[in-house]
Amino acid sequence: MNLTHRAAVVVGCAFLLVLAGRHDRAVGQEAATDHLAKKRLQEGRRLFDVETFGGNGRTCRTCHSKQTGTFTTAEAAARLAEDPTDPLFVHDGLDDGIAGTSRITEHATVRIEIPLPPGVVRVDDPSRRSVILNRGTPSTMNTPALDPQLMYDTREPNLLTQAFNAIVGHAQNTRVPTPLELELIKEFQQTDSRFFSSEALRAFASGGPPPQLPAGTTDSERRGRAMFDNVPFDGVSTRGICNTCHSGPMLNRAARGNPFGLPPGGLRASIGVSERNLIGNPVYSFVVTNQDGSVVVIDNTPDPGAMLNDPPPSAPPGVPTPPRSFFANFFKILPLWGVRDTAPYFHDNSAKTLEDVAEFYAFFFLTSPSTTGFVFTAQDQADMVAFLKLLR
Image (cartoon, rainbow, N blue to C red):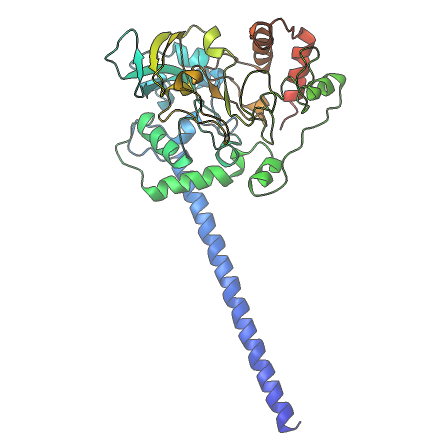
């Protein structure tokens, strides 16, 4: 071997050593990154499942179960029978905030106190600057990573403030969560498998393809599927009737040309849940002074929803924002993936089953000014339920 050849070999070996060193460092950095990610996920899980922040014993998991992302009336009753001291039954879980468990076991609702925004006055007590409302616990299924609209009234702007306000309002903390703890709770909810109804939805949250509606295999499922076709509702058949409000990848956006006067892409609507008030929640009346100076009275509502948001809701880009009073009794259009597992339904939990949901829509289609007289038959209701159960 001549000197030139030897030198080339030495240089080649040195180059390979450099590459090997770079590879080892890269592998080491990747391992360190993976280790850090696992530690963050582990701590996020602990903060969600175990941490009470020195409060009344509640954790995030107290009200957001692994199975449904919320809790059902049956679960509340079973937990009460097993342990009356369960932290679910304290504070806003009690009938009047002090005693009684009939409401939470019958309807799985909790009391929330909402401040009244500027320009909104209670008729029964004009000096009172808040209102107590009975609401269900929104499911965390598919929401933290896939639905930016948080809470039934969409009042929370992001997961960090939502987590903070839940810890303060429901857990009655004595220790303030740090910004890092709130960030870890957010990361956990956006990545852990328990917060997704399927791997397809989890993949979608990570940049994968949007989920596709199942075609259905039975005649009933296929008829239910047609209710979500992206076509205008014609007032004659049920084709496209659900798509009018439940369109888009997550089935939570108003479709273009919907008959209810909602802006395309709108994320809130009223289907008369508060107006019907099936479970008899206490009602209030409000005087609302809108941004333009107009004054509107909202009478006898158990929950005015997004109207109380501060700031008031905005319209989609390119659509003029309506006055505050327009949003009376408006609530979030909910995503429907995994809906079979997230009972009870609506902001007041008045629908305990999907069959109850279908019956409510039959009443709505019959009485809504936009669809007055449209008969959503018992078979139509069964078809809707059959298809909703396919949305996993």
